[in-house]
Amino acid sequence: MKRPKTNIFHLDFQKETECAWQNSRPILRHLVLESEGIASSSLEHQKLITILERLCDKLKLHIVQKLDHRFVPYGKSIVFILSESHLAVHTWPENGYIHIDLVTCAKEEINPQEMVLGFRKIFKPRNTRLLKLKY
Image (cartoon, rainbow, N blue to C red; front, side, top):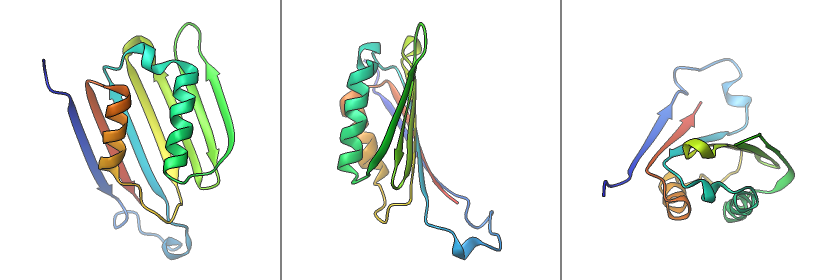
């Protein structure tokens, strides 16, 4: 059996995107996690919402509102509006693919390795890529 592949990229665009308001804006942390090779049963709607609620709880993020949409015949988009910004998830179960976008202004930084390990434990994907953006 082929070993699952994980890539974590730390992208710091801060120096390339300096601007006049650089020092007055809030601290934003942006993580993009995408993965493929996930069993479609792992992307079942209510199961996914429960996992995302637990993730927010573990990361001490506060859910203000939950929005979701199921596409016919496949896929779903789930967005949590957070006190700290947002969490958006899009799935393509027919392709075993998920895309997670997490933006926060939380004081505590999220450990990308820890997030990937937790994600891999739950979803057992074939490949995972996490982009940690700083701008």
